[in-house]
Image (tube, rainbow, N blue to C red; front, side, top):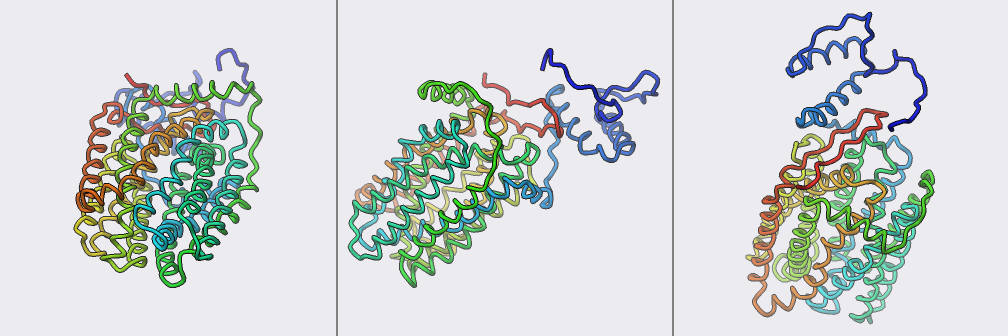
Length: 493
């Protein structure tokens, strides 16, 4: 910082110090990449222990001084697993892993639990009852997660969600479940999710070092997807054999176990600051959100895309599976192959770090349209599952590049609030989509509704690809270890 007095240190330990006058300086053509690479090679041979720092400094120099894209090299699997060496991230990872495994049972269990007592339209109402409180309270959750210790918010959220799913299972077992009861229980879980999501997004940079941030995101998403492929397949078998209540019970227990891991996270206290008024904090988060065109365009596009895709797939898919594909086991298999695609997408992201990662992610979202078209036929289970696999690859590429873009280009102290605006915009239309897709299908036909939903997915992708700020945004290079300099995204305009 300007004017700051820094402690004295030995120049011999400074990997980027200027050469002393009495040292011979080997000529390097500053405009020639070959010359710079040769200089790097000589420095690496002279100081083998500093090769990582030299490479990071070169990437930083390229991005800041020459405007060139940082040379992002593929990540190795061993380097990715290195994030688990950090205790707080390891606890977060274990907590999320357990929760992910249980939550994999929820889509199959909830869908077929509701279909036991009602119709596809009733399923849409239950899903809408879960999403609506999330949309209404997610901004509150963002402010709370930026004020309070985020791991504490996660613990409470897991306990509430576990209790809700446990009550849902008991109501189903009773054999006297009413639609309003199921909606009310899922509404409680929806409120819990509103607090969980911003805290989960904001805590990752707090529990892992900056150079391992993308690796941590990949690990978290791979764990979710790996458990989902196992959980969805097992859930289909369990629900078909023993009933949906057992699947809900597994989900409830997983939330409680996750809370035990998360409660052990030990983070340093945040710097004391004057707590501004609640509304002022919302306004500050909104200013950070709206000042980045690439951010709000993606969120608006996903508001439309999620309402169309999630409503059509999750509400119309299970009845189609029940009537034409063999029931819960087939639907569980389709969800499992989607999860397999998510795993492959995560592995691809380990090796492929494109310069314009967010643009690549947005284009990959187009794979969400084919499963809807195949359900409209309806095609055989194997064909739908293959399309779901490709959809999973695309979803995961987008998810990893999107999470990392937010964490790199949004100030950490506002990250939960910005994430809450992301969630609000992305989810705001989903309750409407869940609630109306059943009646629309009854009015115009299931096939026509699915085709219309796939068309909306395509329009959303085109809107993102046509936005200049999304096409221009490039990944920020990781700073050298110990560096105090941050590389920020180019601002819109």
